Length: 157
Figure (cartoon, rainbow, N blue to C red):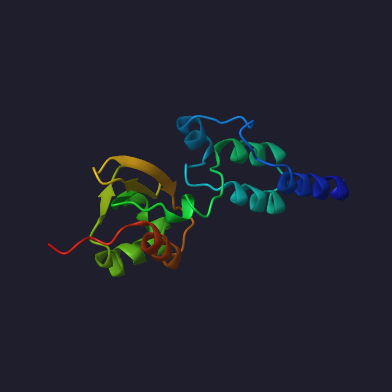
């Protein structure tokens, strides 16, 4: 059994994730807990730790192909950190970011929405919603690192 799982993991890494793969809609992916920022290489990592092939398959249907030229260079003009104020007690890392680090990012706004799981809503130059990423289990330094790499610095006026 273990050898079979190992073989499936290897096959999951080796099998190309090309254009022939089935894609789910953004809404379907969000309902499954995946967002548009999941890279297909993340699904390969997931396969190493999670033995649920259906979950890994769903991940691959919702992921974005890895590309040094496209994904890593995508930046956003701003972001909204959306969270439920009543649930903040369960997310001390997010509280720490909001209280101690958020001011370093003037283009990031905090929005308290009842019953919303913690997430970053990434915005384009027209302040339109482009991507959403759940940050439930992120540490403060992960939030900082992500925002530093993906959100443009606000220009001084």
